[in-house]
Image (tube, rainbow, N blue to C red; front, side, top):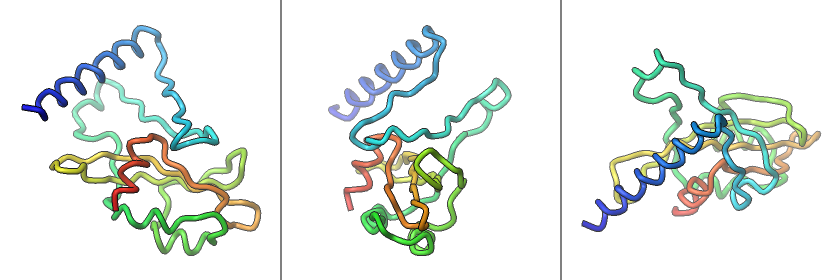
Length: 145
């Protein structure tokens, strides 16, 4: 009974956020200061009517959460790639080279997954300057291990 109430509340909140976003005409997500204190930009998924038939517009690589505790400032790019694999995309951002990833975590006590965006920023010496999650939920799940 408790889980059904939580699901109903979650659906109601998500629906309200979706409607509010449509009403304002914007799809800009707020920056989560806890998981993304440097306010790094992340790519959005944009769906047009024919794309709705796809089951998932963004998918991620299933990765054990404990791997992310190994990513720390000063780590060389080669070690990051050994730990996390090939990045989905490499961009030049305001703070340096950015490696973007999509990871998929199984939600606790659930058969469902959450796809999370993760970014690693490197300095001019190709060492980790910072790493961050787009959303706090993803940061929280990555710390469960």
